[in-house]
Image (cartoon, rainbow, N blue to C red; front, side):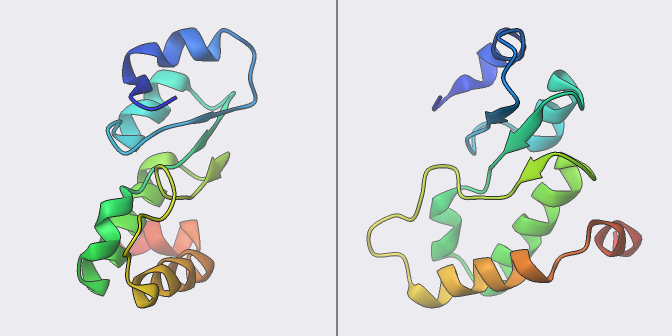
Length: 108
């Protein structure tokens, strides 16, 4: 649900396995509110892909750290926007594939 920040606890109570968080919900806050019994999906802002490659990398790392070690599906908040540079999309996937949670948290 787009803009679901006010509904997270109610969504968890439905018994779902995974809850998608859009980019308006801080992933760390969302994870704390939902706990670790439910997975989280998201939540990189699709507009970020119009930024520099280093900004994309930093945001992906921030999201992965905030989501925690288990139960996270990294993706864009609501897909790729029209006109997004293909290089940025490629970079998003390259960074996502290269990440190790433990290694990432050791860097901080």
